[in-house]
Length: 628
Image 1 (cartoon, one colour):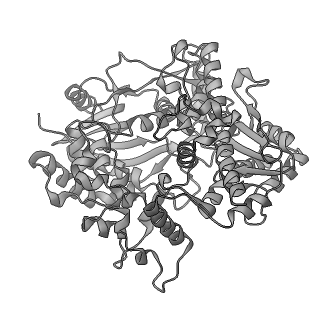
Image 2: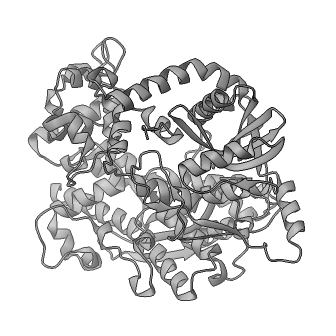
Image 3: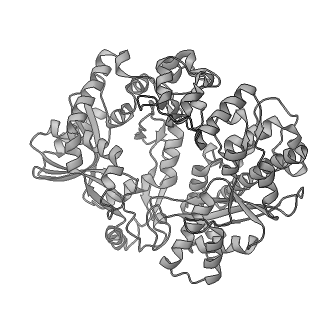
């Protein structure tokens, strides 16, 4: 059987044709797990299930590819039919359509996406180009295979302009692993589908009032369809040309003219260090592993060339991939002025050449200006497709956890406090948590001292909660006033101090490789300054004995394997935290002990986020003291 070009193949090759070849040849990829976990965390599979429930007459097409294509062909001989996962083959082009509704020769092609849209936004189609391109390929194949059909294409997505009337809507669905199921999940850059699509069940299927629940779900209005006919028609010439080119590559092989090495390669899914097959390495050879690399440059992709393209692409074309190949004059403006971003880039190049840690002269003043007590604060929040509470919109922010390490005076041991909302484990666990979340933080830190955050998430979260107060008829004037004082916007300065901005202005270490996220700064500081390991309140994150090399305290986080959990239960990032919170709230297949373990994982992770801030702060303070 000749190779086929599926819609996920087409989607992947949209960024680079060489990726299509690697996928077909079974090369490993680096981001399969992240994509899959993101879908689980944000409720993407639940959206798919909810969409099919809008069409109770729908028929699921199952089996191997040949069987599915034949089943679809037979069903489409009916005058009226609704199919789920209809399989259409046109030449070597193969698609699976989420929902296909046929009435006579009129056909609705419905692509379901967990991505939200806003039906009140007149410019929304421009923001959905990637998804419309996906639909356009399906339209092209379907109309090629069935030229007599009059096809109208739609995107069916959660609508951010609508609020649910159903409380705990997310709890109406459960997800279960089913490793015996032959249906696997094909992610765009996943060559061997190793993730089985979870079985999503409607919890009221056996309820005597099932039909009433179904009708409520259909009347709910969370999902809405967007007619993308005009945009699809505009794309068809491009779709035809591109799919023809990709089929030629599949049939005849790829040539050097079919792809180009560029700055986008930095994010290549086929960059898999340590594995025998590494697509990135095959494309780049040894130039891909130059150290330090031009890809390490802070905001390097934004540096334009004299022809208004990317300066990095210009260097790559010349086979110059070392950070030190960069002409520093090119980072400045045409009049020679050095902007804020260029200043950071120049600093990075200089300090990396010197292999030296850098502190600005102004850091001391910044440190000394902050009023004690210092509150190092981190939040965990959930933004998913399916609302958890009545009156919520899809992807509306839900704040479920905070951690705070407080230092009362210079050199004092940090005091830790935390708050977490975890459903039945929390009094009134089904209540909307945001206001109690903010109120508990207000009670803890009040207006004393200086609250510190890393980047802007905490400020953004509290601003969102402030804006939610009138929507949810929350009348706590004290809370409203406190939220107004602590948060920053265009009209007020707020109280938060951003340690990410402090890093940009005042600190650099070569190991950070041009980035300033806490998960890059922490291992740089921690690994190169063993004295920190001897401080009493940091010791739990220190290896014993100390070994040379880069040490990341986040690697000390472990899961509860004794409860039968797996590596997915180890909370080491924001997506992991979202999924853990979702499972605690709504996964009734988990034992109380397993939910307790997930709760402990959340507490451990969020606590480390704020302790990481303390570690970095302590290092800055010590350097400042040494200078004085």
